[in-house]
Length: 171
Image (cartoon, rainbow, N blue to C red; front, side, top):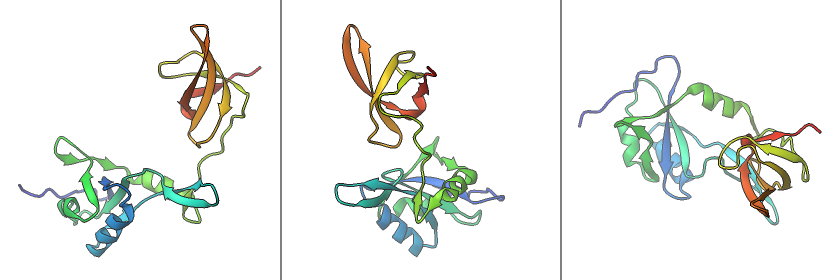
């Protein structure tokens, strides 16, 4: 199999790389030994007793390549499961996306936008199987998921909804 070179001459070409479970650090360490640039965006998670840093995309890292670097050796790096690809060629992530993540980092963690909702607030679901349903927010335990309560077929039902699939009701 001939090896393809990535030819993004403007910026780095970034590969999305799937790591072995909980092996992001191992993959990054071994990629660094091979002189590859890698990036694993981290977020702060509140645990029972303390706050810890966790990968923003669990099981995934980004590997930045210069146009002169070959991507194929990344496959066999210890800690790497596979390179995300389409049609046999690696799927590239825009440098602008990586730079936007890095720009939102404070003290080694990507800061997520503030949650605009409050518990008890009425919202409309705007996407997915519950599109158009009016619901009340009952829990916000994750930064990007919200538990809502709504009536369905004469009964109360709860659903864990992506925050981007909600719209505030101005009452």
